[in-house]
Amino acid sequence: MAANDTIADMLTRIRNANLARHQTTKVPATRMTRSIARVLREEGFINDFEEMDEGVKRNLVISLKYKGKNRQPLITALKRVSKPGLRVYSNRKDLPRVLGGIGIAIISTSSGIMTDREARRQNVGGEVLCYVW
Image (tube, rainbow, N blue to C red; front, side, top):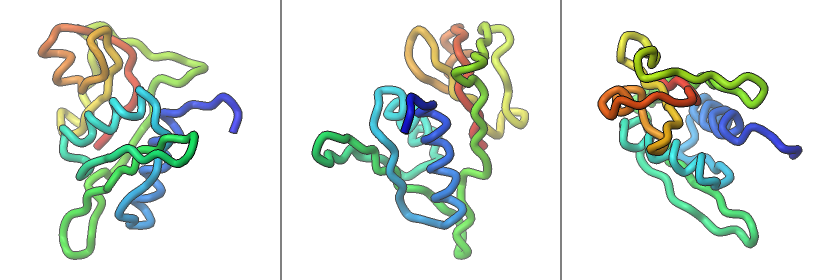
């Protein structure tokens, strides 16, 4: 793979695994994917994630969460907002609300990766990475 958008790649892998009702999915481990997985876990969108060494490569194994007996994925949608070709920044006053607060926006701030709610609480803005609901 060429120099690509690791975040978009991660979101796509989670989206595909969800559609196929997989229990887990693998994502290449970077500091960014680790932080996003941490936020998703804190917000209850995924069960957990762990890091696996496979030779040179490190992967995050993300275990997905479903609800009900027909296993509806908890994550209905993942949407990449800021892309490498078009960055989207938001100051603390204009932080987006996803579906009136049902979903979360994951923001990359100077104090780390966090949800829009957390960024509002800490009074920081940053790059709007993606929406999850």
